[in-house]
Structure formats: C-alpha cells, structure tokens
Image (tube, rainbow, N blue to C red; front, side, top):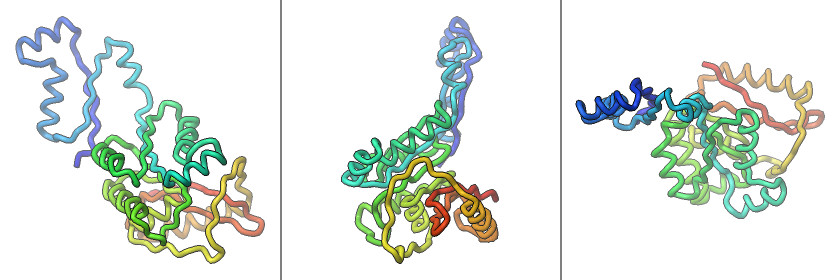
Length: 244
C-alpha cells in the first residue's frame, strides 16, 4: 500500500490550460496526476494553482493529519461526556487543535466496522494515530475488544507514528505481541485536570526512558508509556518519544 501524499502544482493559467486540454486531452496537472496513479495507484494526489489564492491558502495550512481512535463503547462514552463535557476522543481532538489549530483530525471507533474499513482504506493520508484512554479492560477480551486489537495491529503494520494512552496502550501492547496483566489493586479510571508533573515524576520519566532505549522493541513507534505515581508522585501521563 502506498504512503505517498503528493501535491501537484499546476503551472498554467486558465487560457494555457485550455490549450493543453485541447492538445493532450487533459491539463498539465491532470496528465501528471494520471501518470503518478499509473505508477502507484493508491497515491493520494491533490492539485492546486498558485494563481488561486484560496487554493494556495489551503495548501499552506497544516499538513498534519491525525486519526484519533475512541477507546470507549457508547455507554462508557456517555459517562465521560457527563463527567468531562466531551468524549475521550473529542477531548483529545480539542487538545490537539489547541496546540495546532490547523490540524486535520478524524475520529473513529474500532467497534464500528464501517468506520474501521474507511480508516484502513485511507490510512496513507494520516501522519499519526492516537489511541485514547477508555473504561474497557483488555483481559475481558470481548468481541469489541478484539476489534480494537485487530485495528491496532493493522496500524502497527502501517508503520505509523502512534500515541497510545491508558486503554490505548493496553490495546497496542497486546497487538504488538505483549501481555497486559490486571492491576493488583483493581482498575483505576478517572478524569483529572490541571495535573502537574513533580520532581519525583520527572525522575521516573528519565529512568524509564533509559530503560526503554536499551530494549530492542519490535514496534519502536509506540511512543507513549503510561506512568502511574504512588505516594508522593502524582497520577499523570507523559509522552516518551522513542528515537531510533
């Protein structure tokens, strides 16, 4: 499957394009697009003309395309919406747009086969994938959970950059061949705001980062470790980028 996203810039004004169309059956840009698709049929191609300000503006906007994977079934999402004002995926989308307002962010739920199918079909357009937290437990291994794992496995095979949070990390770890054990003290699920990483937390991040770097990971693009603090450490998540 192609991972190519190609922007074709038309080099003619309208009058000259009409000449090309009469002579060759298509504009210079369309001819080039047809050639690219002949060589690599699954390539995503867009055409713009710099003489058109609206097209130029759209092309200059963020090239960041993010796919967000909702980690909750409908009933659990309703709980999150009541508690936090939005679902886990919508909250995450809002955060991404706050950091990078021009990001193109799509949301799907692997429990819905039609959404999964469309996402797999258009996977090449995404720069990265984010798996949200959720209330499910991986070891329950329901049919819905199996769908989440199968989709995560497909994402890993696409060699995409992945950010996995809480439940999402359970799914991606399992899809990568790992094993997730139940927490000895039971599940911990909650919604927090204004979380601050303290000194103990930063020390833990540095230690875990060194440990991870020493491992020969099968899927180095899993870029999130979930850190749970005890005693003086706060409960928090921290992204650790695994540079290879």
